[in-house]
Image (cartoon, rainbow, N blue to C red; front, side):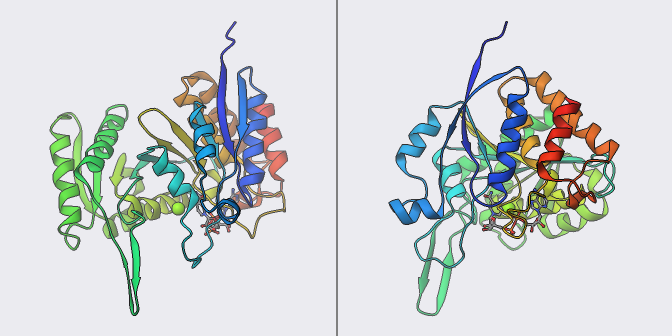
Length: 333
Ligand code: NAI
Ligand code: MG
């Protein structure tokens, strides 16, 4: 009998994060796997109390676990000195690869035959955190380093080897000649180690359009932080919306899994947020932990609930609650 107990850090967060993550945990606990869940809080309130959005003792506690399931943060705009907690957490844990699959599932919403993954650089780019203000102007420093570009493009090529062997390197190198020039240079150097992978260069604006017109031409897209953030919400949209979109943040020795969506304050408290994105994130976590057969069973259970089309939240055209959808997925398991 397999008695492994997985140590998990769980950070549900505010808004619908606090509604969908407990559902994912409830589903995990309905399997025959064992979990030791340790709960943590990060974010704005924590910053108000302690002066940092991600205190050292939280980081230390998270580091004692094998993986993290995360819900959402709420980042108030225009509060001087405050920085996004999730961005800080990803950087502190060295989670350099943000992996966001967009796959067609049997739903009325969304396009057919899409199966792509956006690999987003997660530690620098436009989200370097280097911002400052002069009296009449404001600056953000876009950092592209050889080291971070090397590891993110290598990650993308390795992923492509397990898939359809195509990588699209997305930049705006015609305008951001220096920074994205370096990104492209490094990507092509890494590509030399993967002669079986087809490499394509594309600008971010044309990629935004092609994702809508012809999403099935893409396999793996690799890009810098801001572009990846935008394109991954777009790719979530073409396959049925944020209620279905999971993501993984992967580092050398740790990983954090979260829905692509945030705290969605307008939906919060109504028990109608779709739990599928968070449950798909927990499915990606099981793959990471090596529990591939449970991961596959969870995905199949979601597919069967979608196919049946009877128990769905409003974002997918249904009228069921968060909890009812989770119950249906657990039944299908
Ligand atoms: P959001 O992703 O929270 O929600 C956008 C819209 O998508 C919602 O209004 C809703 O219509 C729909 N939606 C999202 N998740 C859904 C679900 N599970 N089921 C059904 N519909 C769903 O983005 P928004 O409203 O721009 O941001 C709200 C807050 O969340 C902000 O403070 C933002 O900074 C934060 N945020 C945090 C993220 C994170 O922690 N990783 C990611 C995105 C936003
Ligand atoms: Mg985003």
